[in-house]
Image 1 (cartoon, rainbow, N blue to C red):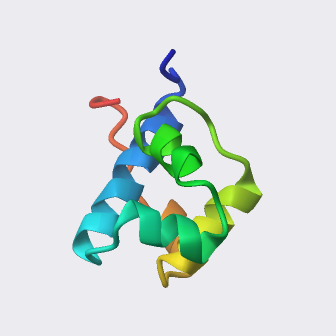
Image 2 (image 1 turned 60 degrees about the horizontal axis):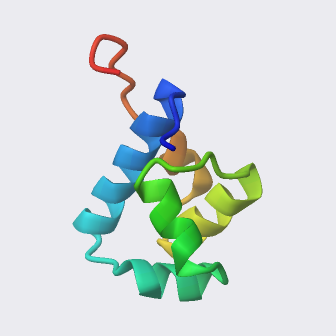
Length: 79
């Protein structure tokens, strides 16, 4: 089952871009955030909507401020 909330789909895409740009492996991110890597994969594969606390942990583990995680350009037409 995939999530249908378009903002979270855009957020998952944005997180993937950050990880790619910073060359961060999902397993490394999960370890740094003290999360199960399956939880990260479910988010990136748009299978679940994470809690705010999870997103904050992900942002800090990726070395970015939480507000940067949410500073995405939301294209209403695309999503």
